[in-house]
Amino acid sequence: MARALQRRRTMHALPRRTLLAATLAAPASAQSGWPDRPIRWIVNFPPGGAADTLSRALGEAIGNRLGQPIVIENRPGAGGLVGADLVAKARGDSHVVLMSSAASHGIGPVLYPNMPYDPMADFTHIALVGTFASVLVVNPGVPAKDLGEFLGMARARPGGLAYGTGGNGTMNHLVGQLLARAAGVELMHVPYRGSAPALADAIGGQIPAVMESLPIALPHLRSGRLRALGTSEATRDAALPEVPSFTEAGYPAARSTNWFGFSAAAGIPPEIAIRWGALIAEALVDATLRARFAGIGVVPGRMDAAGYTALIGGELERWRAVIQAAGIKPD
Image (cartoon, rainbow, N blue to C red; front, side):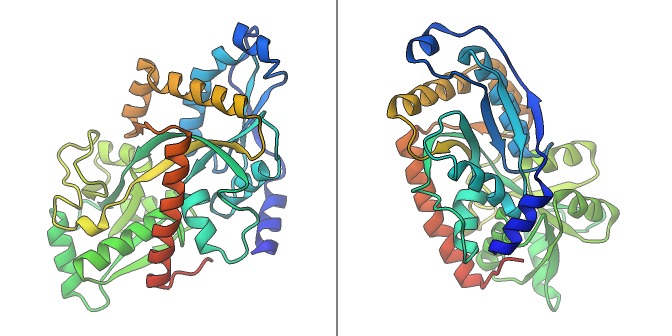
């Protein structure tokens, strides 16, 4: 794992930087002397994905209040671990922040045997930013018209049906395993190197189904190139009101939620952590930002530092149990 992480760090040594905002110092910032240089906002996934989209939207909302530029750095690799490790190593630096996630702080730490960081001790977790569902999508030519028919097809076919995801050990992989266990059927996981090739094969008919994060699948659903059979949260999603949830379809044990949050390195001054929390909370009630989130199927978060930290602790325990039960190993 350590060697794999080093290779990925080398591959991504030249980050993609984007300047989001630069304004005159706000009075509150001037009083504390912070921030006194640009903010490095680490996105530990490639440009264009959910983490990148949310970071840019939130960064724009915060930038005008900070009095310093926010520079987005895409540092993908190892399922989000490369970028998260960069922040973990910046102990005490309140100018380096991260869009933390289920991948880097809920799943990766219990999937990989040799983690370079501790998801709790090496970070100051500030707030939950947003949540969204996973969605099971199929090629329009698949005869199943709903989730029950799809699972019935899987039950009747030796070896079950295949579903693709953006990679082994991802949230969507685990959600597929939860659904298979809840329904008592076999679903064969096909890992791809990212969401784009998995969705392309589903659109082309090379694979019948893909479990994908709603913000990434939504454009393909709106265009009609793919069809949704179910979403992973307890109730129907506002972005797909016509699609039943797994719980509504009779599989509450498959309920799960993708999440992104805002974190800094451990050891930053408590008053700066409070300041960050206030900035995030203020941004998440902004009507323009909420509309942008709604457009991609994301629900703004409502957890402060204590709530978000507790969420991460609970997710680590939950996914550890799922991974051990399914015998999932990292690539």
